[in-house]
Image 1 (cartoon, rainbow, N blue to C red):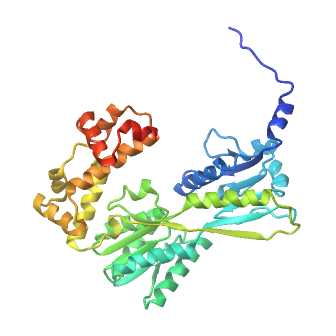
Image 2 (cartoon, rainbow, N blue to C red):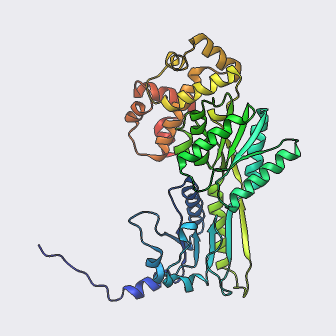
Length: 406
């Protein structure tokens, strides 16, 4: 068998005609992090409503093209993070003349001919305020902050704003700094020693979720109960971490998607404006979605904690064929006590929460997948598709097919 090869002698001319009215945005973000993935969602939301822009992604997957491979594409804007600190030579001169937004990192290239440049960061004051407000509501005997151990400006800002908020309300802050040049295990052991000495109950805000997980691990190493003796709160709401720690981790959730939209909007304004000979660096800030509370900051009151633990079990197991007796058995309490706790704390029943969790999965599958309706019942913990369709119509006032089409 012979392989056919096709030659396109006029390919360059065709591409030029296709691109002449198109603005091009190159995005290079580290998608290992929730922050970057959500920012990309915000960027694409902007592009969907601004058809003049074409968006391409560089080096976000092992099979992706590098930044250098886009040299002949000649983008009109760049959105990049610290993974893009070293720019390829082929791109450096061109990118000095286009709009650029650098996420959580200072601009790596200089030059006076750039159209516009910005840095993008979450509003650190807003994050610190949200963290402090939640932790102070728990009335702890002491408060602490666990940073990175380095000199990152974003971490320093979080500590500074957190300390200032607490000071204004008459509280002092303990700072637990991981030792320099220490392994992760050595840091964990040092944290465990410091945690033993803090007055209990203690509330701890960690600079990011992976550090908060380390605090949870150090508490377990030290035999300190969470949330009984120590409350732990992270930042970023990395669900792959937060929902699978023991106990599950509460986290301050920045609005990363809005940050991505803001970055794209800045590029759009810059690309459609007259260049300025000596532009200043613009500092873009985006806010937060709120605090996602899980078990690590649960109120230590018996009823509230019991309900929080039950809801956590339900969230993780609702798509299995569980009932109220299974939840009670998992918490090692009687069914009567569990039902009373739910009624006192929420005014609702345990079964209500089981059904809520199942229908959340059902509606997500209807919106985001083409899974047959008959199969959805099996995936979401319902014993038959007929039973699910009846309950769905009662709850949403329409059939599952109509919901999917809508």
